Length: 94
Image 1 (tube, one colour):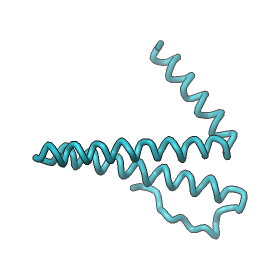
Image 2 (tube, helix red, strand yellow):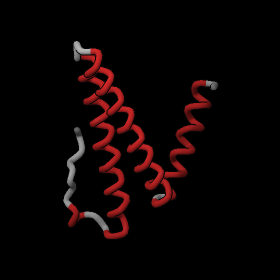
Image 3 (cartoon, one colour):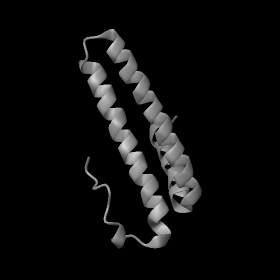
Image 4 (cartoon, one colour):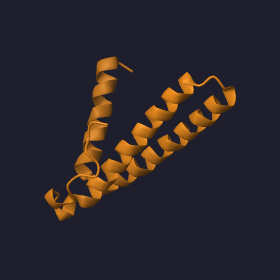
């Protein structure tokens, strides 16, 4: 992971703390998704692969939960997410 979690909370403005907590949660869940999917690729056992991929899917749900909360807390993040989607549509023509 490239980010430092937990961050130095003393450096974060009080009004930004909840947003930083949510972003840290998203990062942690995405790291877990990557780990479980990589381990599933390496596992020989079909049962282990199945469980690892199921757990990875649950972590993706957690990402969605944290993201939904972040978008409620951070209007700028919400706006930029929409802009990002529009850029992808424009650049991929889909």
